Image (cartoon, rainbow, N blue to C red; front, side, top):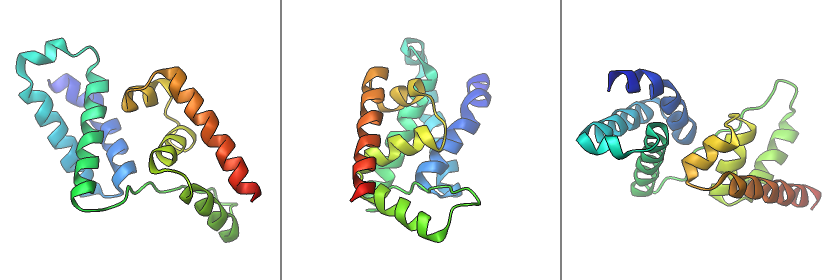
Length: 147
């Protein structure tokens, strides 16, 4: 269990922090995720991918928390130093018109540099489904940008 904790805690924390924007909540999510995993007992032997299980569990805990608090998902956009205030506003407007899950997908891929495989595991989708959704999201963003 300790090896699994050391192997996944940092990435799980970054994932939680990315979705919540709250360090304390992210620490709690990581703690609760590993607690749930530990409570699985012998059933952990049946888990095909521990990493997938942990990320899905953390994601569900985050969504449950945000739902209870009626908070929209916090997904900050990180900008380079050359991006102007006007460009930031434009990007936020385009991203704001996306469905929350689409926004999460595109930002996890483009900004956080998660692989298609990692995203497919987090969302419990096939890699092909993730590729198709990312393609459609990009096309929608291009269309919104032209309007």
